[in-house]
Length: 296
Image (cartoon, rainbow, N blue to C red):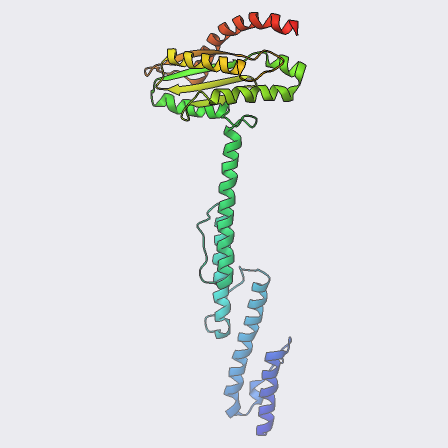
């Protein structure tokens, strides 16, 4: 076989390796001996190219479980690095999905910046969402003060610390009458006016919560029962006279003093005791308001 014939066979085989989807075969035995070694080298190249094409196609389709080509395939070194990076990124993405926003990427250029921005924004959004949930869970939407859950949690902690406390249970008078005769919007104004009045008389550290439609609780430290009753009586006067309405305004309250040695006293027990005292005043107010409301 002539030299040109050997070169033509090898060149055509190399061209087929590089460009054909179906690579032509090469019978090395048909080559003259000086060209057989080159033919074997091209067969090794063919295998490496086939493995590279199969490997890259699998990766392009997201098949990360694809078998890694042998170590002697030098054409796949960069693909192997990409494969390893994709596997690690997949693991990191799963960790982020579980809530681990500490994951970051520092070896993939622009993708690293995009990934790190994504995890940071996810963390910020989750924190904001949690804060909003806590706000909605612990605050009364109409008045913006604490609700029953808030009161229970705060009181439970104070009781654990064995601190002496003043607990006041307040109940708005004739809210149902106002709702029935003037509408629920006016009833809401009545509630908000009460909350605004109370806030003017209490300290920032005092606990104030709405525990029912017309029921409120106030918890104070470093006060005596006498001081609390005097302060709340001022609140009643202010609530009654500050704003003119076509109906009488008022609320009833009951105050109890919680000593440091309260033993196993729970929040519900405290509310029940203060509620019982409050109803004694409620009965007096009902007698006063009955005539006023019947005359309107």
